[in-house]
Image 1 (cartoon, rainbow, N blue to C red):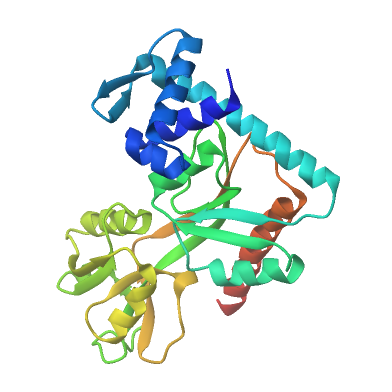
Image 2 (tube, rainbow, N blue to C red):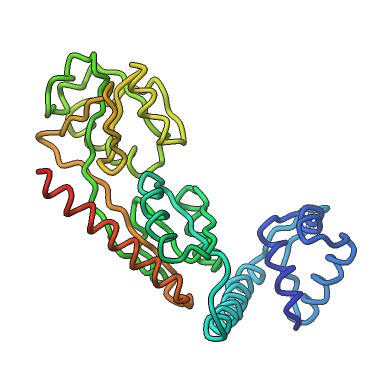
Length: 298
C-alpha cells in the first residue's frame, strides 16, 4: 500500500466525484481511477459505490477512511516534530475560528513574539471547523460554543456576557440595563440561526415569552455594529465585540444570565510545535487580560 494511494483516496472520499478529485490533485482522471483501483485490490474489497463519475463510500470505505485519516495524520505529526527539532521555525500556523471579534488583539500579541511566523485563519461554521481539526489540517480552533469530544482538547478561555446594542437615538439609549420582556416589540439584526450566540439568545428570549423579530440575518457578525448605528435594528452582542462608538450604546441584560463560552481547541494527538505552544500561551494571556480589565471597569 502506497502513501500516494491513501492521499488520493482521502480526496476522492471527500469530494465523492472522480473528475473534481482529479482536478484538485492535478492528475488525469484515468490515472486517479487506476490508483484507487490498485488500492482496492490491495485492501481486497471495493471501497466505493459507483454511479457514473460519482462515488460514495460504502461500509468498507467508511471504516477504512477513519484508519487512513489517522495514518496520514500521524505521519504529518512526525514530519512536524522533526522539523521543530531540526532548527529555527519557519512556516504557517493554521487557525480556524467560529468567532472573530477577538482575533485582531490575539494576532497582534502573537506576532510581537513570532513575527517570522505566518498565520492562516479560516472563518468556518462549527461542523467545518471540527472536520479540519480531526483531519489535522489546523493547529488550533477558537470556537463558540465549545466542542466536547474524546479526541479534542477543549480549554474555556473566556466567559463572555451578552449585551444589547442600541443606537444613540433609541428610547433605551440613556439606560444602562434592560430586561428581555422590554425588548418584545423591537426589531433585531443578528447572525443566522445555527451560530452559537444566536441559539443562546433565542433560547433566552423564548424563556422570557417571545421570539425576537429579525429584520437582518447574516453570517458576518462584524456588520452588526454598523446596522445598529444605522438604526436598522438592535443587536445582541458579546462584550468582547463591543466597540465604543458614540452612536451606539450597550446595555446589560437584567433578570437573565446570557453569556457565551469561548474555547481554544486542539487535537489531543497533534504535535504542537514551539510556536504553536507559544500561540496557546498568548491566547490564554490575552483573555486573562480582558477579564482583569473588565473586573477593573466594574
